[in-house]
Image (cartoon, rainbow, N blue to C red; front, side, top):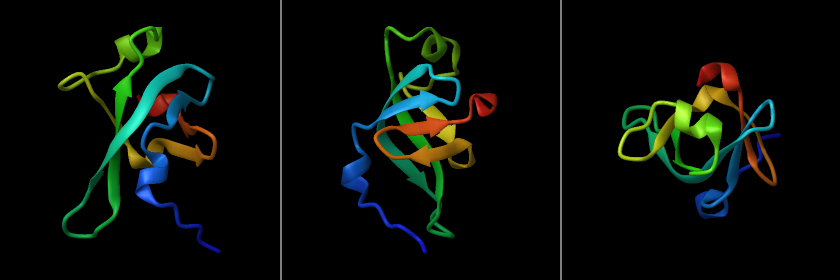
Length: 83
């Protein structure tokens, strides 16, 4: 059974890597105009995070491919190998 989540429930959720490092917080998602599917999530980096400072950023935002997302619950978990 598919579980639907309202987008505004996701805004502000912490985003962490699969090995426990804090990446930042979710602020937006990039959606394909053709398919309507999520392509990537946009993360505001945690300024105190060593891992966030090492990941490529555009306009002080980190773009994480959607297929890197492994779990969404109290926080969002991304597979570090995709970063």
